[in-house]
Image 1 (cartoon, helix red, strand yellow):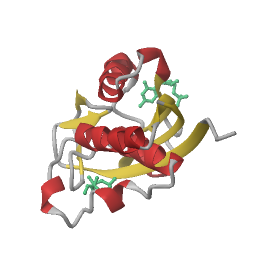
Image 2 (image 1 turned 135 degrees about the vertical axis):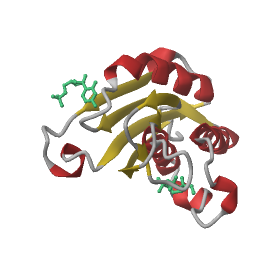
Image 3 (image 1 turned 135 degrees about the horizontal axis):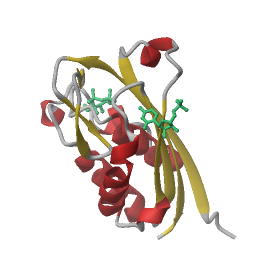
Amino acid sequence: MSIQVRIGHGFDVHAFGDGDHLMLGGVRVPHARGVLAHSDGDVALHALCDAMLGALALGDIGKHFPPSDERWKGADSRAFVRHCDALLRERGWRVGNCDITVVCERPKVGPRVQAMREAIAAELDIAIDAVSVKATTTETLGFTGRGEGIAAHAVCLLVRA
Ligand SMILES: Nc1ccn([C@@H]2O[C@H](COP(=O)(O)O)[C@@H](O)[C@H]2O)c(=O)n1
Ligand SMILES: C[C@@]1(CO)OP(=O)(O)OP(=O)(O)OC[C@H]1O
């Protein structure tokens, strides 16, 4: 009998830099800082991509979208998610559910969670109740606690498409 589920994990970090907004979970979030990144720096979607790729041992986001490639400069990270989803689907899989945790002191993520879930569910063409987005601070500890950057963890379960 063939395996019917696969699991993947992803983790990403971006340092804060100049700017007036973040892209987070495919949603524009006004903020006093931006992030330093080659693409739009959407840490939540980058972690999700790594979880999707990891579930099928397809490498990581940097392998598929090298930072040395000018095509990805300022890229909308939703395109990375779509590409990863296409890779899964052409192999007979889709995301069954995913769970993302954003780690930062600011901005407050809670008010934008629903919009992020909707954006991600739309990209993956799955039900919104299969997409979880959560947030936590690190109680002022570490680089996130000092407000130097933002991190995200993601896990996803793949099921047969
Ligand atoms: N950037 C963040 C961080 C946290 N939240 C919400 O606040 C709750 C409490 O956070 P703790 O780190 O003290 O556990 C958390 O459960 C989140 O709902 C947030 O919205 N944005
Ligand atoms: C997304 C890519 C695209 O070039 O660059 P960044 O936006 O810097 O993001 P990172 O999380 O470091 O992943 C590496 C790259 O694939």
